[in-house]
Length: 297
Image (cartoon, rainbow, N blue to C red; front, side, top):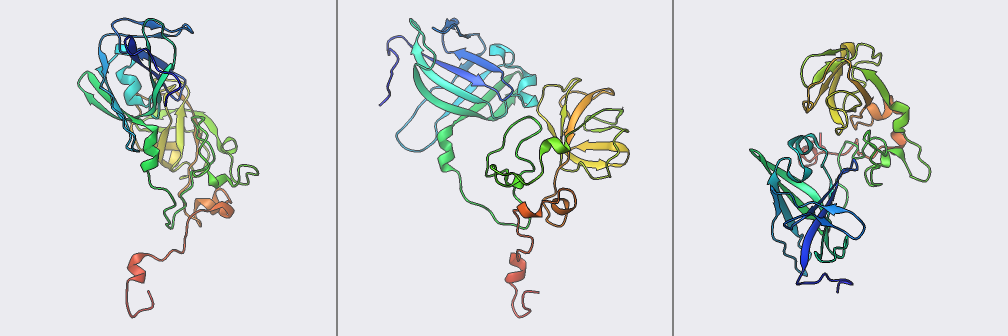
């Protein structure tokens, strides 16, 4: 049973959305804004609405869709399409509009999931954290290393231990540290929205393959980092995805190299980190062990 239940006659549903960059949106399904007992204001702008909510005693995940018009409730097209709300958390609760209290009757904690854009409207699916109980557990074995390089991202996110074993034990890390490989620079030429160059880069061709770039100034400053596809001669960087806004000469960035996940490749030659290699380079493939009469050759 819940320890606290909002007055059913004056109850109102509210949501607090917290993005990974610290942006917080406070929404209320009510005709006007509500001021909580702690002073927080939960907006009730026109142009958005939550769907109805249903829950059961099973482990099936609860889902709420947030539908709205861009710029209503503080959610813009730029924010949604540039990744600011990727992995944002939403705390949904009920309270009384006559005496509102934050998180008075918790409904659930959700993660922002699939987003659909329809002209000037958006629909965001919010999945309950209980959905984690429906996910597969355990490792999938393959020839490439499954660990994520470093134990943090260039965006400042600390990775869960099951993904960051590239660094070794958390208590005594013996692998590469992001700070040792982080570089900064300035764009000197631009070819397209995903191809640009820094002629001052002196690293060998391919050094930044599979890496990440985070823009510090320019039109993309403040957005999430983007993955690098290739690093070629002249400090030319090709991203997997086009930058959200135009890249311009003079834009500054932070950048880290990546890893190809091959034991005899980057793991050995770039990071000298074979001790923490998590793949199975000598794993026999099904096409080999399913053959007959040739000793698997």
